[in-house]
Length: 425
Image (cartoon, rainbow, N blue to C red; front, top):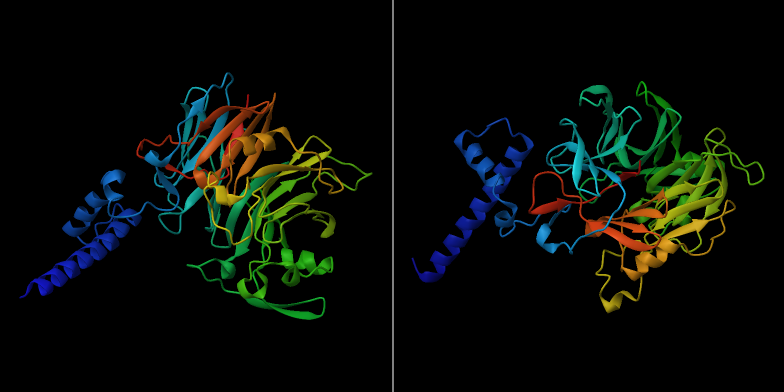
């Protein structure tokens, strides 16, 4: 055999070994207690438990993990306790952490309810220290007791997506039918008729209400139904349009906590963040009426919140376009674009810039997807910069905390923060 033939043969062998090992390692990760291929599975499990630093020489880290070596230096000058609730996919855990002293206060075991190994849980703490938990882009949701037992669960009906928010024993969550689940870059779409016009390829989304005591559905509102009721047409407002179908992409539902008859707000109304159409909507669930629209200066926004009884805020990703990927905010080519926290009055008019937005610009904070803000009182504001894996806390506009949330026994990587819940005693 000549030299060229030997090189090709060796290369082919390496490719085959890597492919087989990858498949077996995936199998071992998905079914860690089942040795379906005998000693070969055991070998694959050993490979799967190799240090991340070694594996990263061969395989890229999953998109939800980031090497600790790639994270910026941390900052922690917190003088008061601030708690963060964060979930971790590989270990199926949720942890409540005191960020001031890095102490893990409580750990919950969430069980194995994920459709694929890389899926992640999101969690919301209830008053009795139980958790409402759901799988992001999965079809499982439930309540886990403080002792990590399942109080109730629901599965197989809808696919849950992004945020969940609580009001008076009911949790509101963004959802999709199984038929609209993203599958490796493609989506199953349906035709529809709205306002006597036929559109094609729209992925409907559901505004879902769940009773926290029983897990039963209290409300299920179709976004297509909302748009039809208000004589709106998602096809022609959407940048995606019929070619992609993702005309809504709900990423947050925030219940209104006050009544203001002058401006037309009732307690229990909903504020929706509709990312694709760069707008927030104020709707009334009982009538499906769209009462206000907020859209000035928004681009790919997330996380809508209510501050007091006169201000609506949201995390404005400020992406150059819906198709813009994450870019390095330190690169001069980004043209000074940073994420911001935007405030609106109750009629939908944009208010003066918030102090925290100036801080985001000062520290060059930008995330093209997800991201959130939490106003904690006493001048504290927590910011989640999802794409860079970093959580920031500002006190009166000054940076007092900056770090990844890495509390799962793995020092070589951190997991992406997703809808972290922040609490202040």
